[in-house]
Length: 296
Image (tube, rainbow, N blue to C red; front, top):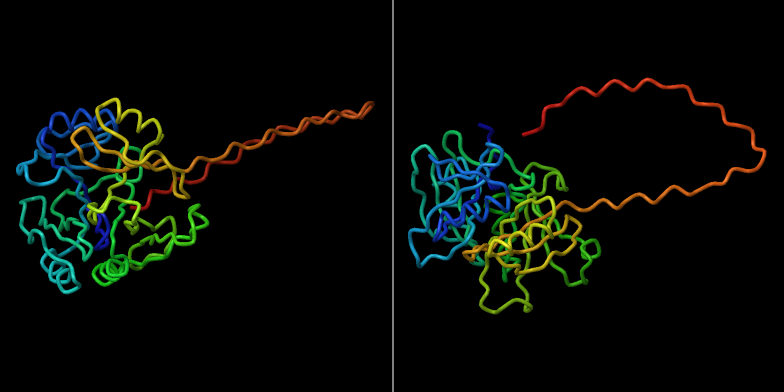
């Protein structure tokens, strides 16, 4: 099992009132299948998420993101010292490791996971898998300080011009400690809940799943009984939409930025009486580059 950097996303799950309905919804939307012996969704046989029956009707129907840690107890102490709180103290779950639920100073709830044997994501970033975490808050300064002090997140402010936003746009992009900030290392960000949002909207973590086509994913979700909360929007990082599934769980889908088509080659009319161009001799193809195993 690969060692994950503390604080990086390692798992997501949703607790649903109707588990079978959830399997039908996400199975068709993302192409997931389900392990009958574990509460896990698979994509081409690899673990991508958890779907569980909701045991307490008072709890919201939502996706929960888990951040990796080698020691859940030590991390819980750091969370409380930095101004967060433990919603659920660490508890063992047998071979699945140790789990806990915490909240940042803005009230966004996230999980922490001290992984067990053969646990966590087996693939991310591909269509139908986890792609991005996004913390929405009304207390950006306190939240930025919290994640930097607890997890060592490296943050940089997004450029409003690149995002197509006005000068007051406030979005912080995160990469893990020890990494060079940039698109290859970024795994999430912090957004501000502005006055444009309902006053009752609490701080929260929005889980993003990768899709091949954002608009098609929205149409499929609606056909399956879900709804579109925020229509597809083009951003520098791809085309994004926010959805609710057929039981109310909120999540986002993101498709890679579209590559603009190359302009057509200009048509050139040869000059009259131009001498013929000699044929170009065939050139043997270059040998293939050696295969490089993917970085995990």
